[in-house]
Amino acid sequence: MVKGVKIENLWKIFPPNVVALKNINVEIKPGEFYVILGPSGSGKTTLLRIIAGLEVPTKGRVVIGDKIVVDAEKGIFVEPRDRNIGMVFQNWALYPHMTAYDNIAFPLKLKKLPREEIDKKVKEVAEALGIADLLDRKPGHMSGGQQQRVAVARALVKQPDILLLDEPFSNLDARIRVTAREFVKEIQKKLGITTILVTHDQADAFAVGDRVMVLRNGETQQMGSPEELYNEPANVFIANFIGDPPMNIYKLPVNHRILEQLGLSKKYEGKYSELYIGIRPDEAVALKQGDEGHLVGKVAIIEYVGSRRYAKIDLGNGLSIRVLLETKIDHGDLATIRISRLHVFAPNGERLETIKF
Ligand SMILES: Nc1ncnc2c1ncn2[C@@H]1O[C@H](COP(=O)(O)OP(=O)(O)OP(=O)(O)O)[C@@H](O)[C@H]1O
Image (cartoon, rainbow, N blue to C red; front, top):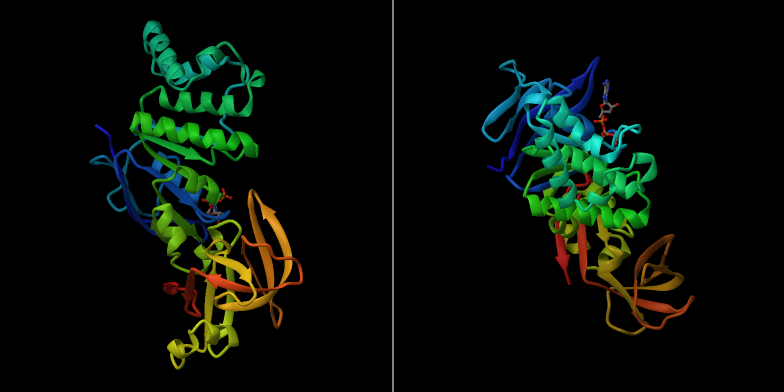
């Protein structure tokens, strides 16, 4: 039976009064790949450690399947070893003096399983993860990606109900990172194991997550699929945090020329004195002067990001915007900017609407 995880009214306050988690509520479905995303210090690791039983919450509870593993009010606490959780840490924590085989076998030896059974399980998991030919090697003789696979194998060999991954890709360089994400996602789908991953890297989060929760200062900012977070960011923080290159975001007086050109001044006059507007570089394009569009400016910089070309366009009065550049335009040319989607946020940062043009 695949199990889900429920986190209910969860608080963690470190003495004297560091609020690391503030009333977290989430239901992770059986078999789901759930990502907790947030900047440094947002409470991600604390949340993962509470699920694993390495930390106790100040308030609230965690339920795995239909078993309460911790309830602060009722004084229930199930020991980490009795939660049937597999965990992979940021540094993988492999034993350097042991071969991959012995590293993977270690949790089973602790359980005092018979030698033949250990051998069968280690070989099975190594086969499934494509590391059968590495079993005789010690960590020092493996690449980062291979070490990570061994760490995942060690977490999976006990057939845990839940797999917890704490920044599993952060020690890998950019190229291996892409294959490592694919590998983890494929294994997760193949085994159907409920998985919770924490990361500060939105590209990691979006690559593997079925759903993503964004944390900031211990508080949930938004929960949803990668598409939902990208298309309808709940506030300016999320808008800023998600997307590469980052969203163009401006705080402007409601009667500002640009808001007028975008048809927003009339709509919000009398309701707000200022607004944030956000435009993703990938949701606006620079066209030749005279083409139909929303804003006009002068091309200041042309840059490549991957295979895409972007232009930074000077809008006057110290404002500029980065947008896609598909046509032939040069530095110094005037360009028309056509926007396909625009996000409007209130002065407190909350999203008011997303407009599709
Ligand atoms: N044992 C502790 N005692 C006191 N404060 C702590 C303790 N552990 C964490 N904190 C604080 O709780 C907050 C959340 O920390 P946590 O490590 O969960 O964040 P994080 O999002 O995982 O950050 P990082 O990505 O840097 O690991 C931080 O303000 C941190 O300083």
